[in-house]
Image (tube, rainbow, N blue to C red; front, side, top):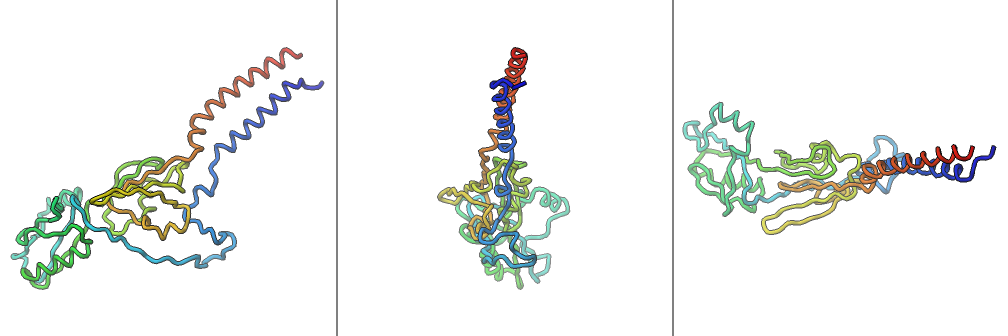
Length: 269
């Protein structure tokens, strides 16, 4: 018995919708593979082959107002005359748990206030330059002084399509963009890795830029290393709204279509 035209049409339409639904719910590997080399195919490259070389551009962050520094001073001078004597055990435990609270804040004028030495201007300097400046000042007080300086207020924020959005801290002087994403559990399945927004704050301005972490040339970008107070926003792919809302609507449409098929089958017997 030949099927009624309307039934055949509905079945063909149903198959087409199911196929489209399956394809639309998938994300291509091209959209999730980091640092792809577009000049060389991965399959054509032999193992242990050098793909490329990039200059190592280390972070050259210059300190700003409200940054917090950890400053330790060592010297050959007797401990009884230390400018910054070692903290007591309880203070060390507090510093380990809340390091920012135990640091030295850069005030609105760009100075940090240190015992004995007084106010030292540090705004606009790198951490290395601050260390050299302190060593120079301390030569008048201590025998062969050596200072250790770290930036404690190195925080950044990740929002959007990441596994765990929020504010994060690092005490690494050179922290990579991909490391920051890893701390947040990586970009989610439906995050757009080719268009991630970075909001970077300076003393007198705020800059925004988009980065593409799918392209190997990102290694050359000034955003390959994050800066303190960076805001990173991962935008969604277009497929996400469809999977969240389109599938539900298509499910309702398929139910209605099945009802039509049932009615058509019963009325054409």
